[in-house]
Length: 275
Ligand SMILES: NC(=O)c1ccc[n+]([C@@H]2O[C@H](COP(=O)([O-])OP(=O)(O)OC[C@H]3O[C@@H](n4cnc5c(N)ncnc54)[C@H](OP(=O)(O)O)[C@@H]3O)[C@@H](O)[C@H]2O)c1
Image (tube, rainbow, N blue to C red; front, top):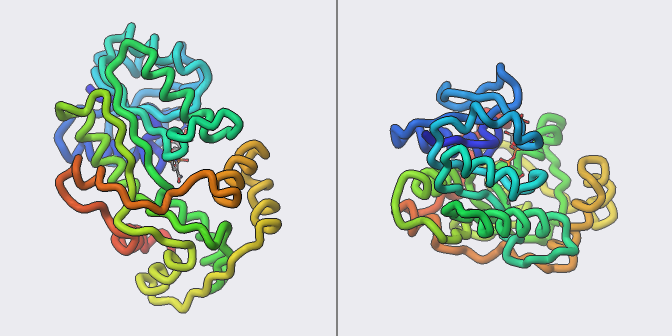
């Protein structure tokens, strides 16, 4: 049995889909009993903030897809191991490689990876670049009109389709030779927000226009949406330039045996969400 955390979200949902597609036994960890997960997978209720709630979800689990940044990751991993888990595929991010303890995002990813390395579990780290699904943040604007005001307009990222995160995670969990490996997951090309919006315009058949927000406008917008230490973290990445997510890395193709999905493919698959 494989336990998937974050199964109602972008990445975890795709891990569930990929495991179901491989006919692997899947259990999705959900916080609410009525949560909906892809493919009608089996669910178990539990909260990663409270390890005591995970006992039922962990029964019979050999491999686990785990998100980063929860309290007491060493304790969580020890509990998983005691329950019989052998292999954990951890979702961190490109900034884990920076090991920047002054950056709140890099820090939680690095600490999660260190906790897993320090456990007696087999591990695989997935370090995706920015997700293509981040484009869903433009939905409210797209419902209002054809102008999209985008944060960090000059920053290009070789963004990755969460479906490719799911495909790699499923291979890592069900296949062999993935223990002790770090996979950096990217799409096939680096795109700036304006490039993504041009693709969305084409796919949706709309005359969309991208307007870049200034750093001040970006900070104001982000401050309403997340804790200030995360706002600072993203400014360090994208304004100070400590994180370069523009490089295309071949890991998705090497693990899955097929090219990574393009932003056009992602947009076409999610076109209904934008309508
Ligand atoms: N977005 C990016 O560009 C990017 C890039 C690199 C790495 N990442 C990493 O990827 C992670 C996942 O991204 P995503 O887009 O898939 O996130 P998402 O769509 O927001 O999903 C988050 C998932 O986590 C679950 N969750 C939250 N708190 C939990 C808890 N205490 N216990 C159990 N489950 C909990 C949520 O469940 P509920 O339905 O109960 O809320 C949801 O299923 C991010 O948090 C980040 O660490 C993201």
